[in-house]
Image (cartoon, rainbow, N blue to C red):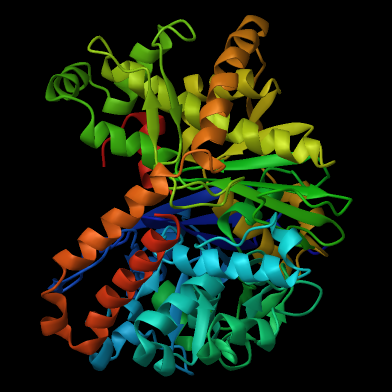
Length: 602
């Protein structure tokens, strides 16, 4: 190790609504400055920016890639100013990103939406992780993989998600072939931002393994891809396959252009890209088997190292060295957590509650949490399913939707709010139990992310899981983790484990299960499991039928899109409508999480 007190690294965490930069001292991991930049266009779900007549179908979630560059231009220099350090003392920069967030680009890395001919084409924009409109493609991938007995399928718990690289790319091909043909590279945003910093494209091992079906040194075969769609046969060779960089290595060095954006020295090390959840494990000191880290924000990602390879049903993946070298990295997750709480406060809480919160000088989340905390467990008479953004684990089905059972004319907003908090804890319990039953036991549960500040929520999780729960002692876990990787890339530490031992955050608060609460929640959890299996495992397919009906109605309602943008836009609507018709025939950080935690409204 060559760590000195006057050396610093930058960690940049790209969340769902904003990017945040943290300046970290190499010698001890002290966070000395930070800044946040909120994306100008946030999440695009209704219409293409600047082209309001191009409406998006249901389940779409896009972003504008230049918003990511703006984080480098704004947040990084602001963080350095906040730290009060000489930029010349910065020796490296690391980044992490939401995943699977995909950017279609030209051979030199230009996003297709930045080309005039594609500025009004939805498929030319970034597909955010929570873009779930590729579910029909994911269903076909899963059926074919199972029928063919593909040996990579068990590594993903038996199901590939609509959020991942292959399903989203297949959707582009089938709904806008012209955009697909123009796309030279199908790039994870985690790698695209590193490309912007270094001028070099290096594909990171984390997203390749977890989101890109890269196992044992290879991707799905051309034969498999051709059977999905003959025009998809060369997808890997032509648009996906690339040099894979090891986590903690330097992907390259800061270019003059990127140095001008950030104010950092030309030529400093830029770490290989990574995923927000996976970089957080070293920041939390969770680099040993059995330590599960839950990064709780708009969604939750659960990551854990293991010293054995097991097939865990519904997991998001298991990758050799996916978190740290020498161990199997496991991932699972929930597609909606803070997003669900935020949705409810915006759409399910009457004005009187907002006024009362304002009069009390607190945010609406904090106000509802205070009211909910006064209740006995089960007093609200409700049970909810946390599927408002689909189910990532263990059902891997984004056609599923939210449910609240037990509402009466006496149900109050704080009742439903608490039931939703509890539902997300029950969803995590399903994941933890599934890992345990598969031979990968969870010994510790560590929480990072904006939601760790909600003390009621943390106690609920401890009681539902019946596990001691600790929080990371940093409010910027992913950014700290990226800074740790930057220090390794800069040669200041030999590897991520040794860097984490010095630079990782101290533990925060500890929540111990309360025995009587554990018993009370066990009864509610059994009811949750009944609903979970009834709606999620095929006993009642109403959620899928409703989604199909919704997509068909949305597609019919976007009839004016074709005239506005030409045949490609018609392809979006027509492709969606076609997918829906087949479905009906066959089966009929981030920022919101911070608001939940603190009560702030944003």
